[in-house]
Amino acid sequence: MSSKTKINKPNWLSLINIDSVYSFDRQRQAFSLFTMIAIALVLITYLVIANHRVYAPILTAALISVNLTIVGCIVYFIKTKQLNAIALITLMIVFVMCLALVSTGGKENTALYWLMFYPVAVFAILGVKLGAWLSSAMLLSCIVMLYGPDMGQVMYGEVEKTRFVAAFSLVLVFSFIGEYFRHRSHLAIADITLEQKQHAYTDQLTGAPNRRFITSHFLKLAASRPAHYLPLSILLIDLDNFKQLNDTYGHDFGDTVLIEFTKLLESQFSATALKARYGGEEFVVILPQMTTIEASILANRFRECVQHHVILTDKQQRVSLTCSIGIAQANHIDDYDSALKLADEYLYQAKSQGRNKVIFAHGEYVSQ
Ligand SMILES: Nc1nc2c(ncn2[C@@H]2O[C@H](COP(=O)(O)OP(=O)(O)OP(=O)(O)O)[C@@H](O)[C@H]2O)c(=O)[nH]1
Image (cartoon, rainbow, N blue to C red):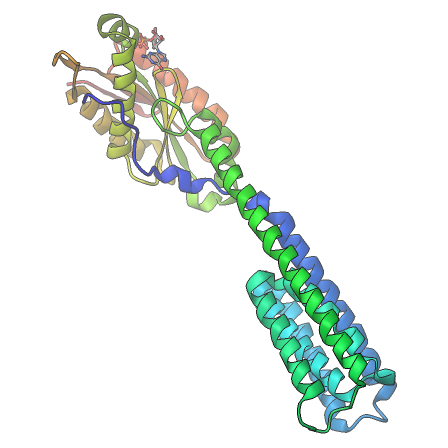
């Protein structure tokens, strides 16, 4: 191995999420939707109670069905937390109700005024694409109703119609511009946040995750999905006599060895294992859903692999190295620190007993 190349496409980067960037945006969407739902429920209930003697039975039944559908949407959301599906259904219902309002004219023919909220709400709740489609569909439907053939709909004055079309178009255009650039700036913030997080969590020399990644991110992730991770086996791995290697072949070659060692970790342990550089010539491998007994077999295989691995210097000298490993198990995420401390004690024992060993609670592996 001669060049100081970093590992390609590391798996662990996919564990980094930037959900926090989107959480306020989801709240904005949910607040807009549930405000609209509350208004729709109150309005429809009022219309049914106040006018059920005047309305045709079919209209009363239709309004009650709309209310029941909206309540059904709320129940569906509580169970599934799927906001987009109920947002689309609700806004389609509101769409149809708005057209019905325009068709009947509403109280004292004021229907057209009430439609102005639609583009604002639909962009806020469904975003740019669906917002543009539904708002444009609303505008076109209204134009057909206002200027098209008589289908039994109420007639509005010419000035009123022109003013409505102009005002609605303006609201639509400015809602689109606002939502489009808000969305773009949001994506830019998300990109920057992800880049900064990746940078903060990456060891610059080896490209491996660093100690901060484990403490600030990985443990929180594991705590949120304990069934996928516990028990954790923690391998604390330290290169043997690294100072001597540095002193003999130079610091640059020492760097090369650290990079090579990281590649070896990456290739010898599974994709689900987290392989991090903890600092200096010390590495941590975290094996999810594994006991120390199982982990010790993998650790010993890795120790042997390191022992037989040869690294060439620039002058084609063959250099081999060894490592010592301490292993401990964490049955709860809160046990991580104490398990790491225990692994450190076993590592210390491995060093003091001559190095190139794997030591854990139930025994040890030594070089043959
Ligand atoms: N090349 C290089 N060396 C490093 C780096 N980080 C730490 N080191 C060196 O690693 C060496 C660690 O030395 P020690 O802690 O004495 O450990 P050791 O020589 O491996 O001895 P044992 O651990 O007891 O086997 C020191 O000489 C550090 O300078 C690095 O990023 N690059």
